[in-house]
Length: 108
Length: 108
DNA sequence: TGTTTATATTGCAATATTACGATATATATT
DNA sequence: AATATATATCGTAATATTGCAATATAAACA
Image (cartoon, rainbow over all chains, first blue to last red; front, side, top):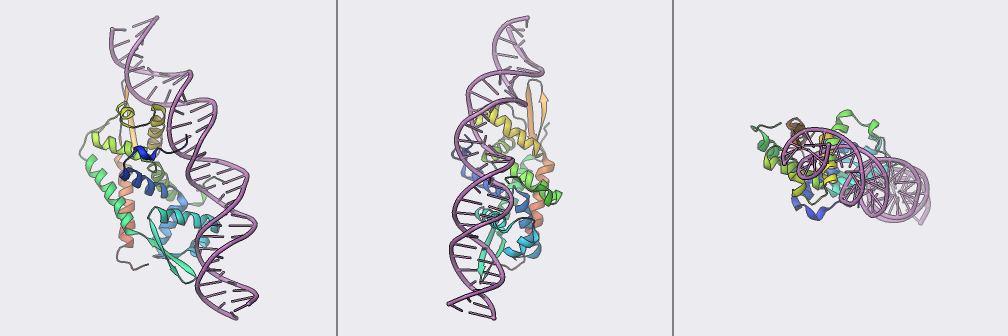
């Protein structure tokens, strides 16, 4: 045990969960917010900005990238990371849909 | 190590991360979607609906409740769980804000 | 070429999560 | 009261995550 039973859920459910999971850490939220704030960024900036070691940040960036939340392009010596709007849109749609479905309904 | 350095991040960042983390598992996404689908209350139904044992589902429900994503009221023998709209709204606002901030910006 | 700068990878210890059987609790029903 | 039904909690094994020092890689610059 300890393994998530991925195969029992739909692809969409797994995808949303994967994105949400990537956002499920304050450091990664802080990274996203920093990228939004400065509008594009370089990894080393974040290293100076957050109270975490460089390898840790590199790892968090990798996870965000893996989930499709950010994308990075090599810019000579450094890497320019920025938000992937497509994935943010997916989240927007997802929660908008849920919100619409539950509104006007009586419950608990 | 292994401990998330919560204290180094803002309260808001930690809150969003906590909500996202709760959604970071396909079973919990499936639970949310099931509640939305049947509109309102679930109880033992969900145990029959998902490929997980009852204690596991109970644990997942606890986490969703803890993150404020669902709320439950005791209904005699059973418990009525439903979506907490407030938290869904928070997520909507959060991603809308990010989306607005990154639109019209040139990057990577 | 040698050095600096920026980022990634590896390896590992500490901790957290996932899943479930066994068991507890608590209301409903007989 | 005894039993059934619904849900929660405990204990624990398997696995995943977090964080970092050490090290690797790779472009920029002297």
